[in-house]
Length: 154
Image 1 (cartoon, rainbow, N blue to C red):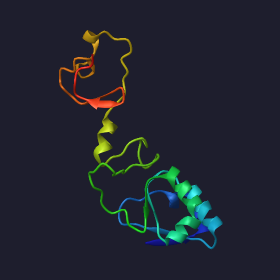
Image 2 (cartoon, rainbow, N blue to C red):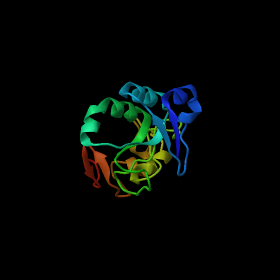
Image 3 (cartoon, rainbow, N blue to C red):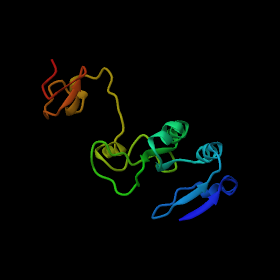
Image 4 (cartoon, rainbow, N blue to C red):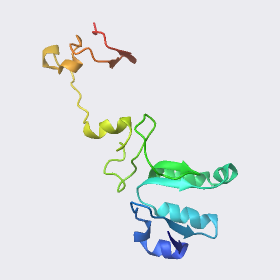
């Protein structure tokens, strides 16, 4: 654990870089304005943790709004230890924490890191991949007109 004051933190940008592993940097701030200044200096990070009471949180929602743009996961009164492969898990963040902040590296949505969207406009059925054909030869579940179905589209 390292500590620094707001002036040292703002004059040494390398202190705001994310460090992987059991490392913490405490930036001592004397006023809320200094805390906001420190948060605005952050680049992209995987997580940020806020410790306090619900009243503290209500008083510092401007900090939360800044962190929403800076990190992929905001933790309240907890620690970013461990991740679980589940639908709600997100473990990504803005660059440089991840190379593409629209995705996650953990959780069921992680598969989208390896996908690329392609649209086939006005293609005849014979020219489409099987998964896109109206007959649905693979019987996969698809979203058709806002409804999930594995039936053929007529």
